[in-house]
Length: 264
Image 1 (cartoon, one colour):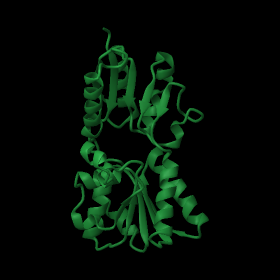
Image 2 (image 1 turned 60 degrees about the vertical axis):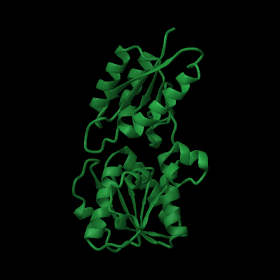
Image 3 (image 1 turned 45 degrees about the vertical axis):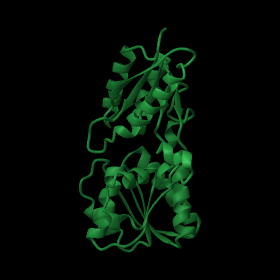
Image 4 (image 1 turned 120 degrees about the vertical axis):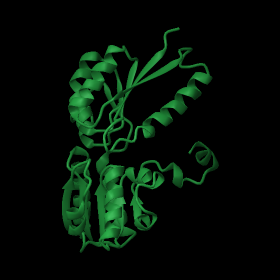
């Protein structure tokens, strides 16, 4: 009768936190699994731990989760937290399915034999986004914006390589904090760009889009999976999203198949 215990380690607090993005699908999945008899007859239970956004907060959440004897861990959307947790996961020998996309979390980089990434590599997404701006929208002089962490830097490097290898140029290159509340300097630096690739979290993407409109910039923006949340949660004004694109691994709101619409 022992349950399968899932420790869900996610940012529940902080200006960039959108906990329902993780909690709602988890609740849907657990309800469906338990309704069909559980996993091998074992019911599934979930306990959630607030990881915040800093590595130290992530480690504190992990230690709390391990005290509750989990069967498996899930969460960690922040690259630095996955990297910081790797030694402790090796010691505990509890598998962690994480949501970070950064290349650095691969087992042969900074990850662990006990960490499993479910997302496409960050660099592949950013490269695809840059190619779309060039091949489909005809942009050649592209501005780069990104969070000043592993996630943003990896995407920036991949995008720059793709742009220059295909004969394009970098109009401007600006980083910012994940919890930035003003991107005026970064936004104004993009004034001469044909398009912008911005790799950040939904809160900062919405901020950038709104500040583009406020400063009279009418150029396309390419983002990652955060684009889906920025759009569906209406984090930017409708007019600010008229030229908004996402190189998203999965985009349920944009899929017209009936069973996907029913799920969404």
